[in-house]
Image (cartoon, rainbow, N blue to C red; front, side):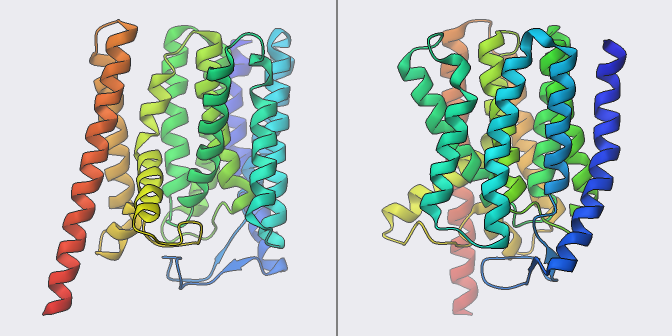
Length: 334
């Protein structure tokens, strides 16, 4: 079985490379092209929706894992069904844009399917918290697909770190699942590295977000990995999306429309390269995770510590954004 687990990321990486290449060819043939301009920050026409390749690889990998772990087959098939729902509505939206309410309805259904094994085992409040958090994560991850290497790079980093942590904890299934997500992201990242030849598209960005969110749910359910670890590893992108939405709502802007107000987008417009932005966010992710690992083995202390880390992240977000806006105003007065 362990040999099979080692084969999973290797085969997933190779399969994602091939599947993404085929998806790019399909996108070019169907003219699924994102042109530069508007809220998009890329400088050349880029194929969207090419992430369908990595989604297929993840779904096949989940079936493989279910065969290797029959005792956990229900969990894995449930996850596969949830991912398929998000991918299907995203695929439709990539081809023929759907109203936001229909996408949200399918996202809620997918999340309900994913957490269905928890019904009865977890309290209603915890299930509701998972439902809200996972639905938001699907959409937050969709927001970060506009910068080369950003979404796939985070997928590789977050899932890769969790795979190592789960392996150390002795949870072979969770380690293999995280390795599958990381390897699939790496296969797509080859085509998404600056200058990107393809973007995930709605078919894969929200799907990848839900896949990473499932690591939090399974960590809690299996009690092998501290669920605060994946939460802090993805805290940079989640804080950016959440605080940006809150700022737009409080400032009276039409928060539900597409925009270029995320901190990572501001950094790109000030002259940061795609690689610099990615490294800055991954640096925060690494620092937040290391801070968690240094905290004493106490559930209360770790929870309070996590709140403190998220508070520091929020302050860094606000100060950085304020400084960028001040520099922009100075530049406009020259």
